[in-house]
Every structure is written in C-alpha cells, then in structure tokens.
Image 1 (cartoon, rainbow, N blue to C red):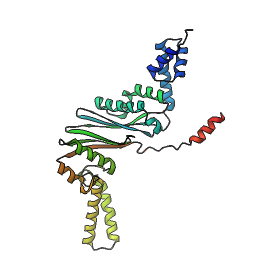
Image 2 (image 1 turned 45 degrees about the horizontal axis):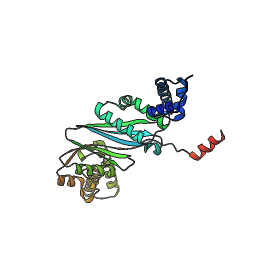
Image 3 (image 1 turned 90 degrees about the horizontal axis):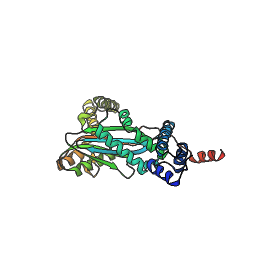
Image 4 (image 1 turned 45 degrees about the vertical axis):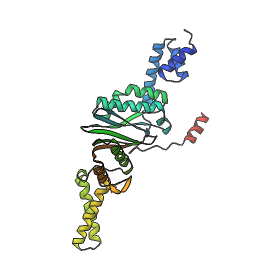
Length: 285
C-alpha cells in the first residue's frame, strides 16, 4: 500500500473542502490515488446528501441575480441558522440565482437539477440537508432592482420599474418587504376576494340596523379601505406615512411594473429540536 502523507491529505482537503479524516480514509481506500480518492468522496458525498434529504430545511437565505433584463429571486433552505450564515452556503445560493437568471428554467425541479452537483458538494461540507425551494424570474422590458433585508437575507423583493431613479424603486422595495402588499393596484386584486369582503361588510352593515343608503356607503367605504390595505399603491408609504406609495411614485416620476417578494421559510412547518436531549442521548451510546 502506498504511504499516505499529510500533504496528500491536505491537497485532497483543499480540492474537496471535506474533513481531514474523510480525506485520509478516501486516500487509504484508493491506495494513494488522488483522482480515485476524489471520486470516492464524490460518491460518498452523494450518498450523504440522499440520507439527509428527509430532514426539514426551513432556515436559509434569499439570493438574487440580474443578468441584463432578466432578474431572478431564489430561496435556498438549510436546517439551521448557523449553516445559513456560512459563506459557502451563501455562495451556493448566489450561484443558484445566477443559474436561474442565465438558464431561465421552467420549474424548480429543473433549476435543482442544474445545480445538483454544487448542492451535493455543499451538503458534504456542511452536513445538513440543503434544498432549492423556489424561485421567480422577471423578464423585464424596463429596469430591474432588488432589496434584500438585513445581514440574514431572509426577506427580499425583486422589482421591475419604469424611470431612471433606481433609489426610488429600492425605497419602494423596502416598503414592499415591510408592508407586504398582495399586488400593485386595486385592478389586480382577485374579484372573488373583493366579492367575499363586500359580502362580509354588507352583512355587518345590515346587522347594524343602518338605513339602506347609509349601509351601502359603509360597505363601499370599507371595500375601498380593504383595497388600499392590500395594494402597493394604496398603502401609506413607510418612509412617509402622510402620503401613499402612489403619491410618492408620482412625485418621483417612477412606476412599479412588477414585483416578487419572498420570506425564507414561509409555509414550512419547522420541527422543534431539543438539542439538550439529543446530546444526552448521544452520551449514553
């Protein structure tokens, strides 16, 4: 058997990013053949990834890429906020966003397939399940900008806008993250949703015993208020609540054409883990 030197282990570790002991074992199994050892590690990394696939990945980051007139916003998940802060994990998320913008895959499955090799390599380094959860692409005819909130990068928005003032569009992006409008204007609100709200307000007005004419005005006023609350243009602007977003945009001669907003983990049921119990159980083994 060939002698396995510390330099060989270090070189393999530098090439793969895996642990020292894993690299040494692979070199022993490959009888010192670096290429074969790397292949063994890749195979084992794939096996490791499949074993972790069933574990809940509800933490993570958002990442974006803008390639010309194409923008992509992606959510990449992991199991713990510790891994979510890892530079390798963040770099992978950014790579996924760039791939989405460049390749414009039709489905999240197609995007995941494009980055599967990278994903397995990151899993092998970090030891957690990592998944590409979702993405949205905007193929713009106008300008694109983005806003990702805070160092944790867990909330963000991709915005298409008309005008030359990117700072204004980014400020509205911050508003979108904070106020979470469902769409841009009242015309875009689902008519069924409006009808349901109108029905509720009508029943409330009837129950109040108000005369029909007054009740009708009450209903229209409440519907108008509802539409203002759920639409971007109708909401009070977070940086100046004395004016609506629509008024602010007109003032700045800017128009929001489209937006995509994500928050990491939305809709994922997180499993509560008792780490103290896990450590205690491991100590008994």
